[in-house]
Length: 432
Image (cartoon, rainbow, N blue to C red; front, side, top):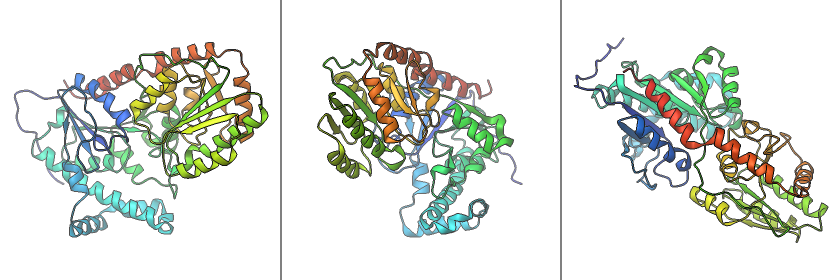
C-alpha cells in the first residue's frame, strides 16, 4: 500500500474548487448555459476556481468577470495526439480491472462494437485521469485539505478522480448527475460507462431532480446516504413575455432535434390540431438544431396545414433563446420529450411567464403543475397533444397561468439562489 503523502507546508490554506466539464469553455453551445452562470457564485465562495475541460481546443466561450483559470492539461492527457500514444492508452486499460468489471456488468457490450469502443475509451481515460490527479496532488498544486473536485457529470472523470485520490483521501469529490448519466436505459445497450465506479468514487452525488435522485437510490441502495438533489435553475431574464393579441395562438418548442425529444410527435400533433380547428390560426417556432433537422423539416412541409404557420430556427445560442422570448409573443411552451431531468428550457420559459405543456417524464412533474401548465401522458399520442392544445387555445385568457409560472420560477428555479446555495454547500465541505 502506498504511503499517504502530506501536502506541502503553507502559511495559509487556499480554498480551491476544480470544476470538471466535458466541453466548456471550448464549445460555445454545449454546457455553456449551465456552467458559466455558476462560476461567479463559486468564485464568491472559493479563492481559486479552476475549470478543467475534457475536450481539447481553444477557449470559445466568454468567461465571467470573476477570475477563473482554465487547465487544459487533462484533455491533453486523455486525448493523445500520436497513434502510438493512443495505442498505449488503450493497452493500459487491459491491465486494469475496470473494463473487466464493465464487461461482466454489461455483457451485451460484445454485441455493440461502437458502445464497446466507448467503454474501452472511458476506462482507459479514467486510468489516465487517476494518474493525472495523483501527479497534481503529489506536486502540491492543490492542498487536499482545501480542495473540492467538482464534476459536472457522473461519468468516467468522477471514477478516475476517485482512484487518483487514494493517497490523498482528504480531497473531496462532488458530482452532479443529470440524465443519461442517471438513466442507463438512455444508452444503447442500456449501460452507462463506469456508473458504479463513479458513484463509489464521489463523496456526494447530486441529481438535478428528485426523480433522478430516487432512481439512483433505488439502483444503488448501499450508497443512499451520499445521494441527494441540487436543482439548477435559469437566470433572471429581466422581462416578461407578452401573449398574442391578434387571435393567433403561438407555440414554441426548444430542444436538440434528436429521437428522444419526439419532435416528430409534435409535428403530427400540430397537423391534427390544424385539422380539428380549421377556423383558428396557429404558429409554431422550434429553437434548436440536430441530426433530425432535415427529417423534421420535410415532415412539417408535408403535414402541416395552411392554418399552422411554422419555422425551424436551427441551432440557437443560449442567449438567443431569451432574445426570442423578448421579441416575440408566445402563448405556450410545448415539449413532447420522452426523457428529461429538470429541463432548463422549461425553466427559461417559466421565468418569462410562459405556461408549459409537457409529458410527465423524469423531473418534469416537479416543474409543471396544474396552476401553471399541463402534464401530458408519458407516452402521448398525436391526438392527446392536439386535444390538449385545442383546449388551451380555446381559453379566453391564460393570464393566471402565466403569473403562476413566473411565481413558481421565482420561488424555486432562480439560478442565482440555487447556485449560491450550491456553492456554499461545496465550500462547507472544506475543513476550516
